[in-house]
Image (tube, rainbow, N blue to C red; front, top):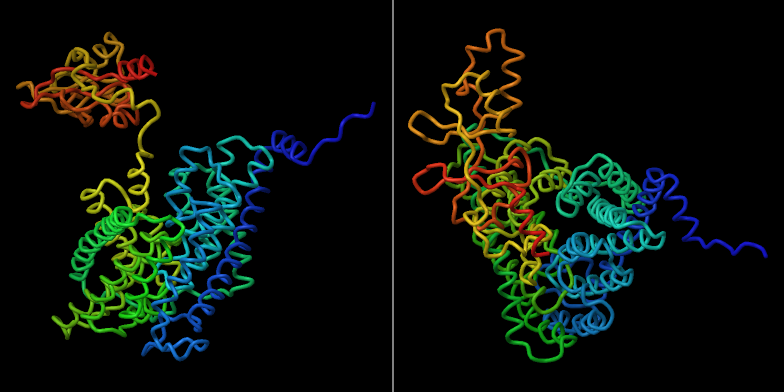
Length: 584
């Protein structure tokens, strides 16, 4: 009998196993091309939907409540009905075919990568594209980056599963799709790479990086061939005129962090309120809630859609301070309301919008106070865009690179870095979750939690710590320290002063290096070899210190200090892992 024919997936899988690296490179190129074409189609859908629902290319740029040319007798009142009609279209579609297409998209991709092995149904790409285009086109005040991330990721996941790749390879192609989508949508290939690496994969491994870069570049080349190669914002050159302005940029970073955290809290407060109030069928919620959004658009039409023309006007100094503040507050409400009623769209562009309004208002205020200082308020608007996004997303590298690529402005890179770092640090201190992870935590999903960590719930450090190892004095020589370390069979030992105060650890590697490299090792003391090792308290939950215990140089244990600073024990990784496996 002739052998049974081999199917295409089987041949593809055999090829992948024979030449894994070459196969992943080829597949990343295919995913990048698909994401680029998907981004082009998605942008066309948004433009068509916007023209259909508003009669204009971008209604946020229109003044004086211009009427819809198809229903001129309604005047500007048509904006009250547009979101409701749009909601009646996309609401049933999302409810029937892909409920994960609701919302801003990125958290769903993060969840799929972390908890589902990268599995995203291909239907999500089509439902997300259509629903988001209708949401934005009918006036929803959301962005297009979240949808394109989910669209590109779904395409990558579908291709990976079609050729039966393993889970790690599926995750990689999901990230490739996300990077390609961002690169093509915003003409920002570098930012697409770092968005995928920093937010989705949380890894910068060389092999992974190469595949994501290839996908991003491919998508960007395809998009540029069709959409052109222009910067997102065409701006004059900005610069820092005075050294003291760096302090002002740091202050802007502080304020941006508060705006970012406030935006995150408002977003989910509106969602909770909508969940409490709405008792009808979910498919009808966008239609009814769209009337509320329409009333807001009637009052402030600049909130219609993504609002890039409004953002550009703010950067160029087209609005006064009071109106900038009004636009900032209105955008928080409009975006939160759009998501709360069941709309589909991203929060990346709204974050940039908020940053532009904040930065422009901040810069204009400084210019009014110091009229002779030669300040450029537009520079503060640009920096504010990155700072608010960084504070909301906790992705500082992406924030810096995306703004540079979107604007082509390198002259403000130093204040940009300063404000972004300040915003990220403060927002992380104020709120544990980013705007993306907060959505998952509300569902009971903690992406930072290690597998098996649930077995440590309620377990304190005191219950698992062991007797502290013999300490080393700061006055002890390096030779004596090596002897004690070798006898103890440990990689490190705690160091205390003559008064018994814990000051760090001395490692076998450091002490041995001092002996072999220093000509007079007898003169080298432990005080010169001390390395700081963070400590934990006896009453601290083990679950909270797990990352510190298992990562880096502390993997041979953590010192346990009581309230008075005395060394009372040592927490070893083996004891924690034993407890986790016992309850698994």
